[in-house]
Length: 143
Image (cartoon, rainbow, N blue to C red; front, side):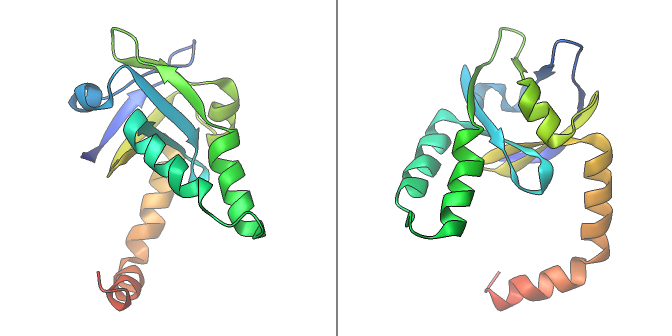
C-alpha cells in the first residue's frame, strides 16, 4: 500500500529517486503513464496488469472509454528501477506533467503520482478549500 507525500528532485538526466519506503514494494520494473490532473501515475507490474485487463473490457464503441484507454495505454512506458532506486522519466511524460526540478511523489494506495512541486501545491490548496463539498459528495456515495 502506497501512502504519504515525498518531496524529491529530478536530476539533469531525468532521473527520479523512488522514496525508500516504496522501493521493495515496487520491484525492479514499473509502468509510468499519463495520469489525470496533469500528473504521472506509476504502477507496479501487478497493478498495471490489473488495470490493463479492466481497460480491455471497456466498450470500444464509447468515445469516453476510447479516450481514457488512449490516455492511459498509449503514453505508458515500462521503466527499470536502477540500483539506487531511480527511474528515468521519459521526456514526453515530463513535459505532459510539466515536471521541472522539484516534484512531489504522492502515495495513493495502489499507485504513486508524480506532480510538479508548484502544481501539487496549487492542487492541494484548491482541495483544502473545497474539502467540505468533497466530503459531502463522497458521503452521498457511501464513503
